[in-house]
Length: 336
Image (cartoon, rainbow, N blue to C red; front, side):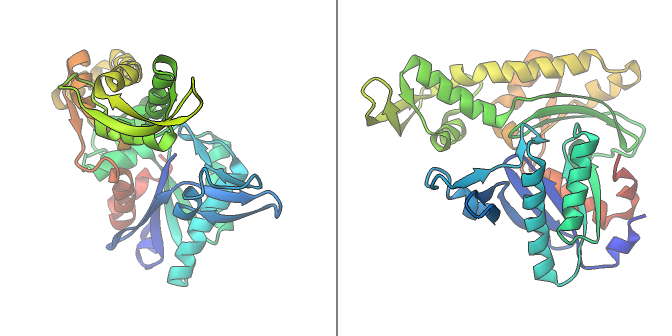
């Protein structure tokens, strides 16, 4: 089914994420990792920069330059922007390899037909010879070396930037899935809103993300502090503010509890034939936001089931999509 791609060096896997896009070349590994963003010039009515170069413009751009993200909360939010971004990524691949590439794109499991067709169309318009899709949960399971093609249940909880998705996999397909439009970006926003409401200071999105990484913890530990530059909402002046890890804990806990409820809902609806598989093996935890300190232990304590973080949560979706190209036996997962 996919042998025509394996016979060519011009084959790539693409993980199209809410915040980041990765490209994998068989037998070479990840060759591109960049923000999923693109700059639009309203005067010229054209897109002109994407990835890291456009991300660096955020907050510094004039009114006629808009920095756009084609995906929001796990789904394509603007088809025109998505097409422009994907076309640019494909164009870069084509320029480097002088051949029209065959590509496999990993996409969220709940994209509708129009959104899936938009990804395929954008790839073709961008110069790809062929475009095939694989759903994120299947790619994630493959990337962490789970036998998704076997008649056994694998439960994958993917906590990304824009969406938290939990899927039951078996026999190379998705048996059932649930999603929550709340994930890592919402944790950043929760931190901003908490300090805005309780401390009357405004924290930038970049600092909120740094606070999440450095102080975020779902279990209370000895207090840590981080000084950041903020805007005092009373004086309207900039100042240095000391952020406490105890406050951050309070800010992020409601998001974690919603992920707990999502997972509990899925566990309560598991078909009986899969229950033993899941309770024996536990839940596979992946996605960049799964790296929030204490999330695995917090979920396990609330749900009374093992929660097993993958070794490489930032990259296992793209590594799984790459395996589909490299290993012929996984070709049947495309479009599953």
